[in-house]
Image 1 (cartoon, rainbow, N blue to C red):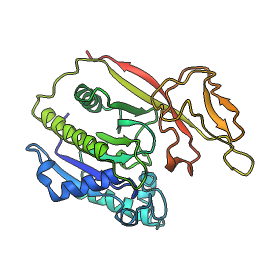
Image 2: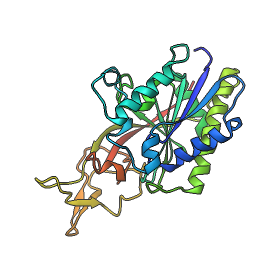
Image 3: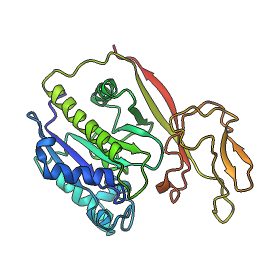
Image 4: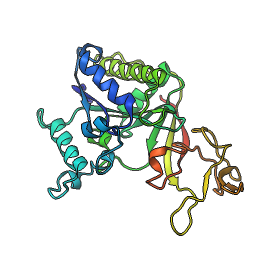
Length: 294
């Protein structure tokens, strides 16, 4: 693979996730923090109107607006649809190439710590993930089982890089410790790209653990789509921990446990994510894979 020439750090894809918003503003004020010798770095506030009023979005979720057919559809006129097209044009404007690598900064109300979600299964992303986990052993690596091409997500504009998800932090709130950790990981990613370009990125010494998303589950609901149960206290805040068949998953308002009826152990993430109530997602299920580099 050729050298990486451009990196885009994106914050504020959701206007109530303050970590990325204020990091991008900081990088705008102090570009030397993200400057490296072998590539150009740009910092972008993705959804400025939503950021201004502190809501997740104005009309629709911006992070669901990047499918190619939507970007090329002149009839989609919502604020976020227009903004997605602007971002696409902005990233395409230089030499008609998208940025070589995108880091999309997000925060979650779920207890996911630091999570790097790979934009694709490209060998460079795996190399970068192994590099990051060697520096930050607690960082989790997440991959989607679906193909990233023609995805809804902003990170799909480039197959290199991905989403940096940090939590738990409430919507519209800054957490100083998580802010600092996110900034450190962003700078480590930039250092990794620099090392890659210079041929000095260290080879992975330890196996890489990757969690692969395999699906999502909704809350129990009645015929009127009203929620009938909550995340079980035994599962709350236990992202990335094993959920075995027969384990309690939900608790009804009358105090009855609803058990996990799957046939195999899964590792739930985005447990009780506030933004996912409207999407009908109580949690996502993942499977764990250990990748040994040779």
